[in-house]
Length: 231
Image 1: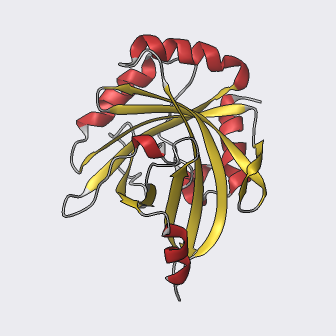
Image 2 (image 1 turned 30 degrees about the vertical axis):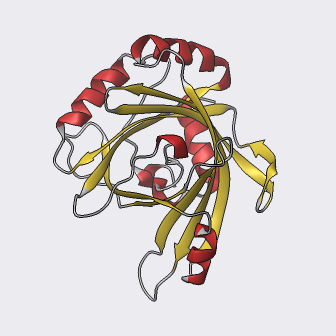
């Protein structure tokens, strides 16, 4: 199985809608920026995957390239909620909590539709709103009419290089819905994401991300993933 196949299979297994999924699509709770207000914040994103046996080689390379020689670690539980209207696609919100840092606030995240039309951009770009919340977020969303679509655990490492955040993590499914005590890995690979959250119009960021991604080859090939390719 190639890295691209592993990435595609992992995404399909968790039914992440049009790559408004993990990434976590999602940074770890402990590293999430808080955005919103009147500033139109955008997420610039490159994604790829690396097989389990290549993980240590990739981490070694990242230690040499990033600001923090030793990565931070995280284990987060993410729940994806849908609100279906009379027409069109459902409205998707993502609730995430830290399992290894339980005192951290919950985070609620909205990710807009990716802007794939501009071929000159080297990274996927999408609107991003992220807010910290109290721990009764799940009850609030259910009361508002949202329903839980799927949930998963993300566990891995996080690096920083300037404004870029690099996460290397594995996705786990819950064997018992609602319980994170028993989980199972979805694939034999780790997802790799390089992202920057910045105001709209900062397209020079995508060039910096592409240059950084070149330094990680051939260990991992980071791409501007079209969500339609992985459905």
